[in-house]
Image 1 (cartoon, rainbow, N blue to C red):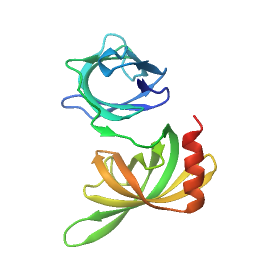
Image 2: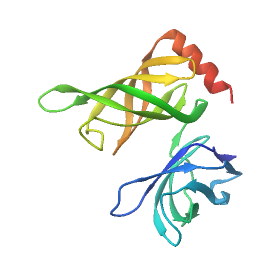
Image 3: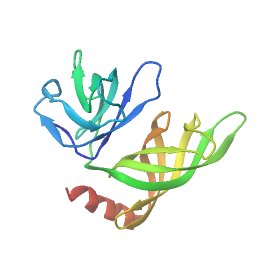
Image 4: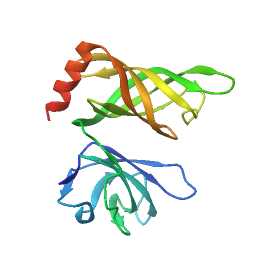
Length: 195
C-alpha cells in the first residue's frame, strides 16, 4: 500500500524555477504508485496556472521521484511511474513540522568549517530525518555538509542529535542519526510508533 500522509510536505521541481514546497491537505493511498489518485495540496498559484515538474514523493515506505502536474491545488502524477521506491525506509516515521537549530560541519578546502543553521524538521523516523533549513545569510544550504548537530523542538521536549548527511539539495538535508541521547532515542521510538 502506498500512502501520502496529510500534513506532509512534497517538493515540486519545475525547469528554471526554485523548488516549490506543497503541503498535502488530505491523505491519499492506493495499492500501487501508478494507481495513486490526485493529491490535494496547498498551492501558491491562482486559477488557470499549470506547472509540470519532478515531484519528490515522500510516502510511507520511502522516497521516490515522479513526473507530476500541478493545477489549481491538485497534483496529478504524469508519465511512466517509477518501478520502485528509490530510498526505502526500514523505520517508522512521522511527518510534521518541528523547529530546529544547529551547526553544520562542512568539508571544504582547505579544511572543515562550521555554519549555524535554523529551520524545521519535516519528517522524523527512528533512523533519520528530513531537515529544511538555511544559514542566516543564504537561501540555500552550503554545499558539502558532512554532519549536523541539531536541537529539535519535539512534543516531549528538546531533542539533541548529530545527523550524518545522506542527501542534500537546495534547502533540504536528509540524514541518519550518528548520535542521540538514550532518553531521546526512547522518546523518539515511542513517538514514531504512536500513529
